[in-house]
Length: 397
Image 1: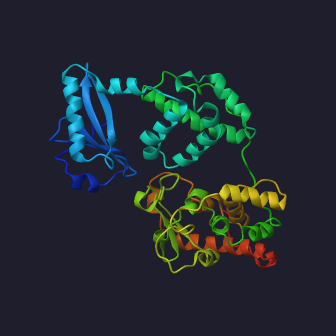
Image 2: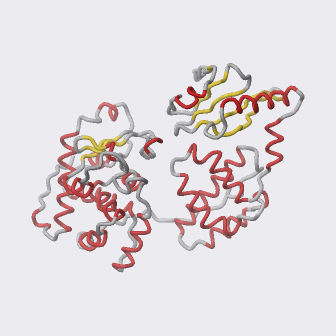
Image 3: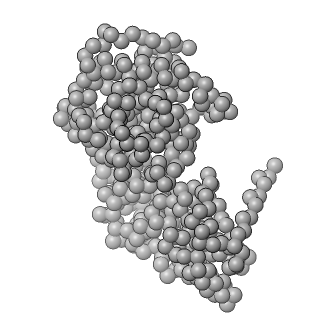
């Protein structure tokens, strides 16, 4: 069956409506009934932008006017009216605007990608932007984006010694060119057909003997406390870094699946809401009279977790460990206590799919609480040098 068409939303826009209209899971348009062709585009993140949409030679054309936070409704209507007047005179303002700007330098293209697309559509855009700024801009920043060839991309890959990092840079750069291709800014993506470096899946976990020195090295800095919580909770590093006090209810950390822009919460990786019991050692780490703000960092989420882990590994003289390896260590500890892989997947929020996952959200609360306390007790016993006090509590099934 063909997918039903989404109903067209029309409204005589007001400044109040523009500010208060609520975002939804998917972006949507609200057409202004006062100015023909003007529409307000609302992203799931809450970002609002003005678009002027018209038909040219029978094909729809979209012209980005600007963000609603920067351009008021009255000015947006004036600009849209000018666009529609130009269309009536046989012009194609969207094509002319693209021709005027062109792709420009790679630095300009990368900045446009962030402003016009990444910030609104990619909740982890800052990670990619950091890689581009550090590795691509020094080599390509002043080059015309249209002149960058596949050989340039391969040369950039060869310059980066770490295979995984090189792959990440390739993905970040390719995202920019893919967007430019889709927006008809560039005719091709030079990253296409560039092979990624072969890498082995990481299996690094902290051994029992490594837990005490790592725990001591974490210390009491904000990054150290976040890494301790990550080890004891087994959740994703980015989610732990963005933990909010508003989401802690009666000892449970309740993670909204969707982003909450006003709180700086990015949403979970699989977009599924999740509940995590906070065992006593974690409650001791995050204990505070504060009821709002980020748990680690207060005004902004904690950062530099990867850098701190590298510094600790160098100090201890051990094989590299990343924040995600602490999550893997938690999962390995959980199964080593006899708990099943199904329980581990449920606690670590690996998406299982199916309608049952919706109805079972609270069904396993008692079991999840017992498992989280057992794993935390085991880790703390190892940290404190008394593993003999830990008893296997799970039942494999």
